[in-house]
Amino acid sequence: MKAIYENKIKAQGELVEEFGSEMMIFFGDNAPDTLKDYCHLIDIKKVNGEIKAGDYFEVDGSKVKILAVGEEAQTNLENLGHLTVNLSENLDDLLPGAIICENGNLNKLEIGSTIKILEA
Image (cartoon, rainbow, N blue to C red; front, side, top):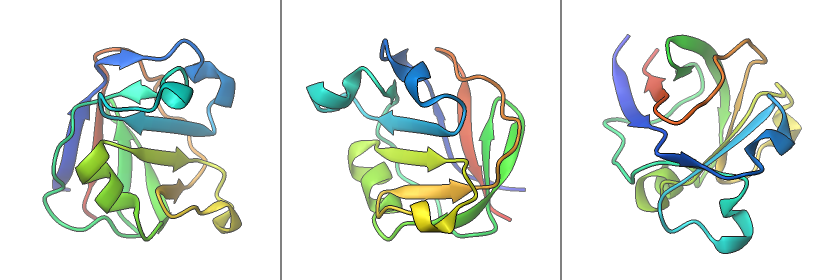
Protein backbone atom coordinates (compact mmCIF):
# COMPACT_ATOMS: atom_id res chain seq x y z
CA MET A 1 0.00 0.00 0.00
CA LYS A 2 1.23 3.44 -0.93
CA ALA A 3 1.30 6.20 1.71
CA ILE A 4 -0.43 9.29 0.30
CA TYR A 5 0.07 11.20 3.55
CA GLU A 6 2.60 10.93 6.37
CA ASN A 7 3.27 13.10 9.38
CA LYS A 8 4.67 12.98 12.92
CA ILE A 9 3.12 14.13 16.18
CA LYS A 10 5.14 17.17 17.35
CA ALA A 11 3.23 17.95 20.53
CA GLN A 12 0.03 17.06 22.34
CA GLY A 13 -2.49 19.12 24.22
CA GLU A 14 -3.01 18.38 27.88
CA LEU A 15 -6.54 17.04 27.29
CA VAL A 16 -6.06 14.71 24.28
CA GLU A 17 -7.16 11.76 26.41
CA GLU A 18 -10.60 13.35 27.00
CA PHE A 19 -11.95 11.77 23.80
CA GLY A 20 -10.69 8.31 24.74
CA SER A 21 -9.65 6.04 21.90
CA GLU A 22 -12.65 6.81 19.66
CA MET A 23 -11.63 10.27 18.46
CA MET A 24 -8.39 12.03 17.58
CA ILE A 25 -8.04 15.67 16.54
CA PHE A 26 -5.00 16.80 14.57
CA PHE A 27 -4.05 20.42 13.95
CA GLY A 28 -1.13 22.42 12.64
CA ASP A 29 0.65 25.08 14.70
CA ASN A 30 -2.27 27.45 14.13
CA ALA A 31 -4.74 25.46 16.24
CA PRO A 32 -7.27 27.76 17.92
CA ASP A 33 -6.56 28.28 21.61
CA THR A 34 -9.96 26.78 22.46
CA LEU A 35 -8.99 23.49 20.74
CA LYS A 36 -5.23 23.30 21.27
CA ASP A 37 -5.49 21.36 24.54
CA TYR A 38 -7.46 18.60 22.75
CA CYS A 39 -5.19 18.31 19.70
CA HIS A 40 -2.25 16.31 18.49
CA LEU A 41 -0.07 18.94 16.79
CA ILE A 42 1.46 18.19 13.38
CA ASP A 43 3.15 20.01 10.52
CA ILE A 44 1.01 21.22 7.62
CA LYS A 45 1.66 18.93 4.63
CA LYS A 46 0.00 18.16 1.30
CA VAL A 47 -1.69 14.85 0.53
CA ASN A 48 -0.19 13.01 -2.45
CA GLY A 49 -3.51 11.84 -3.89
CA GLU A 50 -7.12 11.83 -2.74
CA ILE A 51 -8.33 10.49 0.61
CA LYS A 52 -11.16 8.04 -0.09
CA ALA A 53 -13.37 5.54 1.70
CA GLY A 54 -11.54 2.21 1.55
CA ASP A 55 -8.13 3.77 2.24
CA TYR A 56 -6.45 3.17 5.61
CA PHE A 57 -5.48 5.41 8.54
CA GLU A 58 -2.33 4.20 10.30
CA VAL A 59 -0.64 5.00 13.62
CA ASP A 60 2.87 3.58 14.06
CA GLY A 61 2.11 0.52 11.92
CA SER A 62 -1.40 -0.28 13.22
CA LYS A 63 -4.16 0.58 10.77
CA VAL A 64 -7.92 0.83 10.36
CA LYS A 65 -10.04 1.17 7.23
CA ILE A 66 -11.50 4.58 6.39
CA LEU A 67 -15.28 4.22 5.96
CA ALA A 68 -16.22 7.81 5.03
CA VAL A 69 -14.48 11.11 4.27
CA GLY A 70 -16.02 14.51 5.02
CA GLU A 71 -16.17 16.96 2.13
CA GLU A 72 -13.67 19.36 3.78
CA ALA A 73 -11.39 16.75 5.38
CA GLN A 74 -8.60 16.79 2.80
CA THR A 75 -8.71 20.57 2.26
CA ASN A 76 -8.53 21.21 6.01
CA LEU A 77 -5.70 18.70 6.44
CA GLU A 78 -3.64 20.28 3.66
CA ASN A 79 -4.30 23.91 4.58
CA LEU A 80 -4.58 23.82 8.37
CA GLY A 81 -3.16 20.45 9.41
CA HIS A 82 -6.66 19.83 10.80
CA LEU A 83 -8.33 16.44 10.69
CA THR A 84 -10.70 14.70 13.08
CA VAL A 85 -10.46 10.91 13.03
CA ASN A 86 -13.55 9.21 14.46
CA LEU A 87 -13.37 5.47 15.18
CA SER A 88 -17.08 5.06 15.94
CA GLU A 89 -17.96 3.34 12.63
CA ASN A 90 -21.16 5.45 12.78
CA LEU A 91 -21.48 7.23 9.45
CA ASP A 92 -24.07 9.58 11.00
CA ASP A 93 -21.16 11.08 13.00
CA LEU A 94 -19.44 12.34 9.82
CA LEU A 95 -18.59 16.04 9.96
CA PRO A 96 -17.19 17.97 6.97
CA GLY A 97 -13.62 18.02 8.36
CA ALA A 98 -13.54 14.44 9.60
CA ILE A 99 -13.01 10.87 8.53
CA ILE A 100 -14.91 7.92 9.99
CA CYS A 101 -12.90 4.73 10.43
CA GLU A 102 -13.64 1.21 11.55
CA ASN A 103 -13.26 0.71 15.28
CA GLY A 104 -9.93 -1.07 15.60
CA ASN A 105 -6.99 -1.22 17.94
CA LEU A 106 -4.65 1.57 16.93
CA ASN A 107 -1.37 2.16 18.71
CA LYS A 108 -1.51 4.99 21.25
CA LEU A 109 -0.52 8.36 19.83
CA GLU A 110 2.52 9.87 21.49
CA ILE A 111 4.92 12.66 20.63
CA GLY A 112 7.01 11.27 17.77
CA SER A 113 4.30 8.86 16.58
CA THR A 114 3.91 8.56 12.81
CA ILE A 115 0.48 8.84 11.22
CA LYS A 116 -0.19 7.81 7.63
CA ILE A 117 -3.02 7.57 5.17
CA LEU A 118 -2.52 4.57 2.91
CA GLU A 119 -4.11 4.24 -0.50
CA ALA A 120 -6.16 1.05 -0.80
